[in-house]
Amino acid sequence: MKLSGYDIRMIRGDTEGIIVSVKTKDGEDKPLTEGDIIYLTVKKSIYADEILLQKVITTFDDGKAHINISPSDTKGLRYGMYVYDIQMNSSAGAVKTIVPPSVFEVCGEVTYD
Image 1 (cartoon, rainbow, N blue to C red):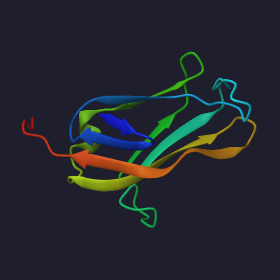
Image 2: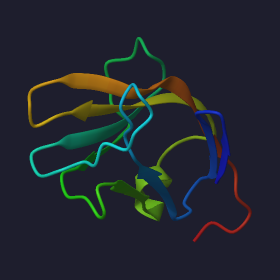
Image 3: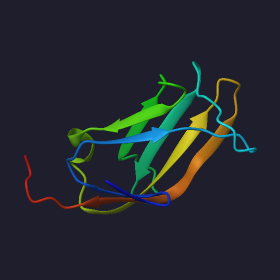
Image 4: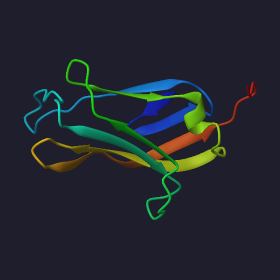
């Protein structure tokens, strides 16, 4: 996987992981806790209704969300550009998009097993 800013580029069918942490406006770490929910959502475009891939994280290690993408998550996607974002729903009721809509590119592979 390659990250460039918020853009993600990965090989279809690979195992990948993203670690998400949250900071306050002052730049201090804000640990994720029980009751918080992190969503990674992938769609064809920001206007599409259909969710192609979504990960929902409700448990956290060291206050961080570990988003694991398994081979089956991308195996059925065509090569190409998609869009994703990451949203946090806090236990206090706040909803924040912590990664704005960004490119999620699924690249081709040679070994397809």
